[in-house]
Image (cartoon, rainbow, N blue to C red):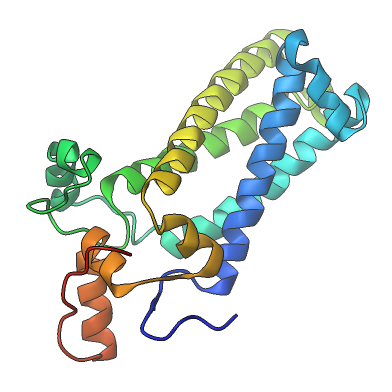
Length: 221
Protein backbone atom coordinates (compact mmCIF):
# COMPACT_ATOMS: atom_id res chain seq x y z
CA UNK A 1 0.00 0.00 0.00
CA UNK A 2 1.32 3.44 -0.98
CA UNK A 3 0.99 5.98 1.81
CA UNK A 4 0.05 9.58 0.97
CA UNK A 5 2.91 11.98 0.46
CA UNK A 6 3.93 13.95 3.52
CA UNK A 7 2.61 11.44 6.04
CA UNK A 8 4.63 9.75 8.79
CA UNK A 9 5.03 6.00 9.22
CA UNK A 10 3.70 5.07 12.64
CA UNK A 11 3.61 1.27 12.43
CA UNK A 12 5.34 -0.82 9.73
CA UNK A 13 3.51 -3.71 8.09
CA UNK A 14 4.89 -6.50 10.28
CA UNK A 15 4.00 -4.59 13.43
CA UNK A 16 0.42 -4.17 12.23
CA UNK A 17 0.18 -7.86 11.34
CA UNK A 18 1.51 -8.73 14.79
CA UNK A 19 -1.03 -6.42 16.43
CA UNK A 20 -4.02 -7.76 14.51
CA UNK A 21 -3.09 -11.39 15.16
CA UNK A 22 -3.00 -10.51 18.86
CA UNK A 23 -6.30 -8.64 18.63
CA UNK A 24 -8.10 -11.42 16.74
CA UNK A 25 -6.83 -14.05 19.18
CA UNK A 26 -7.98 -11.94 22.12
CA UNK A 27 -11.48 -11.54 20.69
CA UNK A 28 -11.73 -15.28 19.99
CA UNK A 29 -10.52 -16.06 23.49
CA UNK A 30 -13.04 -13.65 24.98
CA UNK A 31 -15.94 -15.20 23.07
CA UNK A 32 -14.91 -18.79 23.75
CA UNK A 33 -14.00 -18.05 27.36
CA UNK A 34 -17.33 -16.36 28.07
CA UNK A 35 -19.19 -19.34 26.58
CA UNK A 36 -17.53 -21.54 29.23
CA UNK A 37 -17.73 -18.98 32.02
CA UNK A 38 -21.50 -18.95 32.53
CA UNK A 39 -24.49 -20.76 30.96
CA UNK A 40 -25.97 -17.44 29.86
CA UNK A 41 -23.10 -17.09 27.38
CA UNK A 42 -23.10 -20.71 26.19
CA UNK A 43 -24.72 -19.71 22.89
CA UNK A 44 -21.35 -18.24 21.91
CA UNK A 45 -19.94 -21.75 21.67
CA UNK A 46 -21.87 -22.14 18.41
CA UNK A 47 -19.25 -19.86 16.83
CA UNK A 48 -16.67 -22.60 17.43
CA UNK A 49 -18.76 -25.65 16.55
CA UNK A 50 -20.24 -26.39 19.97
CA UNK A 51 -19.12 -26.81 23.55
CA UNK A 52 -16.56 -29.57 22.99
CA UNK A 53 -14.83 -27.76 20.13
CA UNK A 54 -14.83 -24.54 22.15
CA UNK A 55 -13.15 -26.27 25.06
CA UNK A 56 -10.62 -27.83 22.69
CA UNK A 57 -9.61 -24.75 20.68
CA UNK A 58 -9.64 -22.16 23.48
CA UNK A 59 -6.25 -23.08 24.99
CA UNK A 60 -4.57 -23.36 21.59
CA UNK A 61 -5.74 -19.89 20.65
CA UNK A 62 -4.29 -18.78 23.98
CA UNK A 63 -0.90 -20.20 23.03
CA UNK A 64 -0.97 -18.23 19.76
CA UNK A 65 -1.88 -15.08 21.72
CA UNK A 66 1.06 -15.54 24.08
CA UNK A 67 3.52 -15.94 21.21
CA UNK A 68 2.03 -12.99 19.32
CA UNK A 69 2.05 -10.66 22.33
CA UNK A 70 5.61 -11.70 23.11
CA UNK A 71 6.48 -10.34 19.67
CA UNK A 72 4.94 -7.01 20.60
CA UNK A 73 6.82 -6.93 23.89
CA UNK A 74 10.10 -7.50 22.06
CA UNK A 75 9.31 -4.62 19.68
CA UNK A 76 7.97 -2.06 22.13
CA UNK A 77 9.19 -2.64 25.67
CA UNK A 78 11.77 0.15 25.43
CA UNK A 79 9.18 2.64 24.13
CA UNK A 80 6.91 1.74 27.06
CA UNK A 81 9.37 2.36 29.88
CA UNK A 82 7.84 4.75 32.42
CA UNK A 83 9.37 8.19 33.00
CA UNK A 84 8.61 11.41 34.84
CA UNK A 85 6.79 12.90 31.87
CA UNK A 86 4.28 10.05 32.05
CA UNK A 87 3.48 10.86 35.67
CA UNK A 88 3.09 14.56 34.78
CA UNK A 89 0.91 13.59 31.79
CA UNK A 90 -1.42 11.64 34.06
CA UNK A 91 -1.78 14.67 36.31
CA UNK A 92 -3.12 16.58 33.30
CA UNK A 93 -5.34 13.76 32.07
CA UNK A 94 -8.35 16.06 32.39
CA UNK A 95 -6.92 18.23 29.61
CA UNK A 96 -6.37 15.17 27.44
CA UNK A 97 -9.94 13.99 27.99
CA UNK A 98 -11.18 17.44 27.01
CA UNK A 99 -9.18 17.03 23.78
CA UNK A 100 -6.97 19.98 24.66
CA UNK A 101 -3.37 18.84 24.94
CA UNK A 102 -1.72 22.26 25.03
CA UNK A 103 0.23 22.59 28.26
CA UNK A 104 0.38 18.82 28.67
CA UNK A 105 3.90 17.30 28.76
CA UNK A 106 5.10 16.19 25.35
CA UNK A 107 4.56 12.52 24.62
CA UNK A 108 6.98 10.04 23.06
CA UNK A 109 5.90 7.10 20.95
CA UNK A 110 3.31 6.05 23.56
CA UNK A 111 1.49 8.05 26.21
CA UNK A 112 1.01 6.99 29.82
CA UNK A 113 -2.36 5.41 29.11
CA UNK A 114 -0.94 3.27 26.31
CA UNK A 115 1.98 2.26 28.51
CA UNK A 116 -0.39 1.24 31.30
CA UNK A 117 -2.35 -0.97 28.88
CA UNK A 118 0.88 -2.47 27.53
CA UNK A 119 2.28 -3.43 30.92
CA UNK A 120 -1.06 -4.54 32.32
CA UNK A 121 -1.43 -6.98 29.44
CA UNK A 122 2.23 -7.99 29.78
CA UNK A 123 1.37 -9.01 33.35
CA UNK A 124 -2.07 -10.53 32.78
CA UNK A 125 -1.23 -12.66 29.74
CA UNK A 126 1.44 -14.73 31.57
CA UNK A 127 -1.01 -15.15 34.47
CA UNK A 128 -3.62 -16.40 32.01
CA UNK A 129 -1.06 -18.70 30.42
CA UNK A 130 0.16 -20.39 33.61
CA UNK A 131 -3.28 -20.72 35.21
CA UNK A 132 -4.62 -21.94 31.86
CA UNK A 133 -1.99 -24.67 31.74
CA UNK A 134 -3.01 -25.83 35.21
CA UNK A 135 -6.66 -26.23 34.17
CA UNK A 136 -5.86 -27.71 30.73
CA UNK A 137 -7.21 -31.13 31.70
CA UNK A 138 -6.21 -33.01 28.55
CA UNK A 139 -2.50 -32.55 29.22
CA UNK A 140 -1.97 -31.42 32.80
CA UNK A 141 -4.82 -32.63 35.04
CA UNK A 142 -2.74 -35.62 36.21
CA UNK A 143 -0.07 -33.30 37.59
CA UNK A 144 -2.22 -30.95 39.68
CA UNK A 145 -4.66 -31.72 42.52
CA UNK A 146 -8.26 -30.62 42.20
CA UNK A 147 -7.96 -27.85 44.79
CA UNK A 148 -5.09 -26.31 42.82
CA UNK A 149 -7.10 -26.50 39.61
CA UNK A 150 -10.04 -24.75 41.26
CA UNK A 151 -7.81 -21.98 42.60
CA UNK A 152 -6.17 -21.61 39.18
CA UNK A 153 -9.59 -21.40 37.53
CA UNK A 154 -10.57 -18.57 39.90
CA UNK A 155 -7.37 -16.62 39.16
CA UNK A 156 -7.74 -17.32 35.44
CA UNK A 157 -11.30 -15.95 35.45
CA UNK A 158 -10.39 -12.81 37.40
CA UNK A 159 -7.40 -12.12 35.16
CA UNK A 160 -9.58 -12.62 32.08
CA UNK A 161 -12.16 -10.13 33.35
CA UNK A 162 -9.43 -7.58 34.04
CA UNK A 163 -7.94 -8.12 30.58
CA UNK A 164 -11.34 -7.69 28.91
CA UNK A 165 -11.96 -4.41 30.74
CA UNK A 166 -8.51 -3.12 29.75
CA UNK A 167 -9.14 -4.20 26.14
CA UNK A 168 -12.45 -2.28 26.09
CA UNK A 169 -10.66 0.87 27.30
CA UNK A 170 -7.93 0.34 24.70
CA UNK A 171 -10.43 0.01 21.84
CA UNK A 172 -12.49 2.98 23.03
CA UNK A 173 -9.40 5.19 23.22
CA UNK A 174 -8.31 4.08 19.75
CA UNK A 175 -11.68 5.07 18.30
CA UNK A 176 -11.97 8.26 20.34
CA UNK A 177 -8.60 9.67 19.22
CA UNK A 178 -9.27 10.37 15.57
CA UNK A 179 -6.50 9.03 13.36
CA UNK A 180 -5.40 6.26 15.74
CA UNK A 181 -7.30 3.51 13.93
CA UNK A 182 -5.80 4.61 10.62
CA UNK A 183 -2.35 4.33 12.15
CA UNK A 184 -2.89 0.69 13.03
CA UNK A 185 -4.87 -0.24 9.92
CA UNK A 186 -2.84 1.66 7.29
CA UNK A 187 0.37 2.36 9.15
CA UNK A 188 0.66 6.13 8.80
CA UNK A 189 -0.36 9.38 10.47
CA UNK A 190 -0.23 12.98 9.40
CA UNK A 191 2.49 15.27 10.80
CA UNK A 192 -0.30 17.27 12.46
CA UNK A 193 -1.58 14.20 14.30
CA UNK A 194 1.91 13.27 15.43
CA UNK A 195 2.63 16.84 16.54
CA UNK A 196 -0.57 17.04 18.55
CA UNK A 197 -0.52 13.63 20.26
CA UNK A 198 3.11 12.40 20.22
CA UNK A 199 5.24 15.51 19.82
CA UNK A 200 8.40 14.12 21.44
CA UNK A 201 8.25 11.06 19.16
CA UNK A 202 7.94 13.30 16.09
CA UNK A 203 10.88 15.43 17.24
CA UNK A 204 12.94 12.26 17.53
CA UNK A 205 12.00 11.17 14.02
CA UNK A 206 12.89 14.58 12.65
CA UNK A 207 16.26 14.52 14.41
CA UNK A 208 17.03 10.98 13.24
CA UNK A 209 15.98 11.43 9.65
CA UNK A 210 17.13 15.04 9.36
CA UNK A 211 13.90 15.91 7.59
CA UNK A 212 14.30 19.64 7.98
CA UNK A 213 12.61 22.21 10.21
CA UNK A 214 10.25 21.27 12.98
CA UNK A 215 6.68 20.67 11.67
CA UNK A 216 4.15 23.35 12.49
CA UNK A 217 1.07 22.49 14.49
CA UNK A 218 -1.94 21.42 12.43
CA UNK A 219 -5.37 21.23 13.93
CA UNK A 220 -6.79 18.31 11.99
CA UNK A 221 -5.23 14.89 11.43
